[in-house]
Image 1 (cartoon, helix red, strand yellow):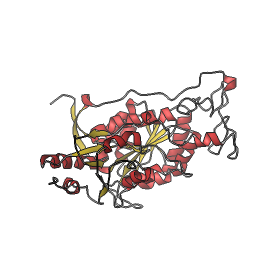
Image 2 (image 1 turned 135 degrees about the vertical axis):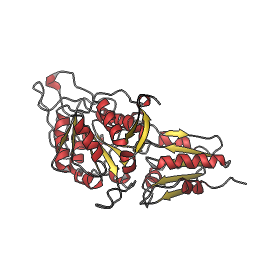
Image 3 (image 1 turned 120 degrees about the horizontal axis):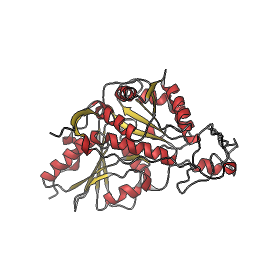
Image 4 (image 1 turned 90 degrees about the vertical axis):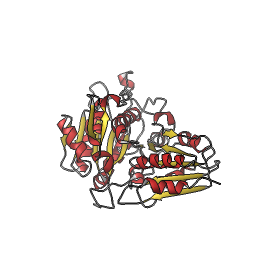
Length: 377
């Protein structure tokens, strides 16, 4: 065994990734099952406690606007309390990351039970029809690297980003070779370096339609920040011709290359594709292996970006596929609904979409294998 091999929780890997990404302000409030991340970030010296989740988001807004890399972690009830702050972060273009650790709902639900019921909540937490990016680790070993990618995306696009995890992913433990962790290089938010007199808080857009940043309180430039509709200077305006462009460009970046691509295990001639994310991907991998052992040709896709639903990322895996099996630990097939709503199957050969769903216990590999079906005669 490598001297760098250790039995670690997902929570500690999230914290490790956050430090690597340069997070220097974590503000949180303890809530099961996200408390391990909260405790670890405080132990590492970059976390502070807030009196509640509402206040935590406000602290993060101020810290990020001052130039800090900001992050928090919570679960469903706390995430709902953060909704107003997340809307302000999107409107004011404040980069921050919320690690949302899912548990059974609704409301208080079962705080110690795993679930995947917050996909659409995470995406649509902001009012006005403006979704936020939602990333998801494909396995526990990826929690560190995906945290870096979430921070990088927030910094690059100046937006709040949700890293969607689950109780079993964060509280669970696996033996990991720490030398094998894939940790992307951190990126910096775009900075304004032009003429101070010409600076506009929401102007000078780059190719991603993101304005360069100067910290609030900068003595050289006027940084005017508002969560109301505004023009390039940050002056509050109704949705007129000067304010409309600054509102419309808050929609998710159209360039798919800025988002993490899915993990794929394609098999030539496969007419069935299994899609699973997060903790359910473990069962999906086993189900695909079992099906192949029976002679069934089947492919696997594990998305790391859940929102936006990226057709350019997902559609190639649908080539030749007639049956799509989507496994997730909720009762109504939330991600399946997102896939169908995005229309990525239009123009493909898909004729059957099967959901494998449940609540209160992990999706079993056998249930996914049953949905894949037997070898065709």
